[in-house]
Image 1 (cartoon, rainbow, N blue to C red):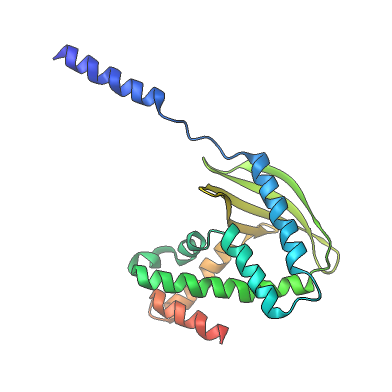
Image 2 (tube, rainbow, N blue to C red):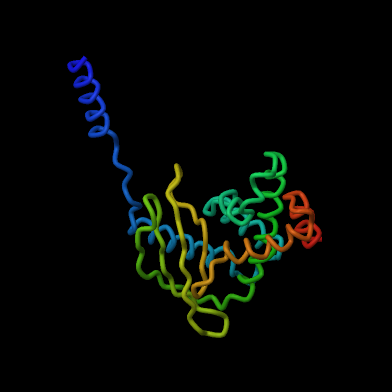
Length: 199
């Protein structure tokens, strides 16, 4: 019995020793990802010759490729997510993406065209990083924008953006909690309320 126990213990130790270590995200790569994303957004979304429809289409492409919209959506739903079916969640994700596009694409129409500066990037958990940037606002002032990114199979994705320390995801979570309470506490109620806002 002792021999069997020692054998099992040795095998367990070998498995632990040989298991791949989950490395922290490469902060330099995370910073490069945000720099590329920011420059691409400026180059493709701030042109004065773009129609609103073209700007929305290009923004939606950038959003889908570089932001984890379902993950952000799950966070803003909070506890209400557990009460929703997969179909209800899928419907919410679609409307949530439409809402993000409608809310933020207009900012690029006003953007002054100045670039932005990527500052430091620090590890965030076991597979993420926070990249700090300085963005020039339309009135010429600089605003601090922190990008929270996570590694994915395709590289990095953005899971939150904080402007001057205020998290967009947290702000939406608080706003949507109020809308949920006003609409029966259901994800479907929230989805229909957001759809009505979109017109």
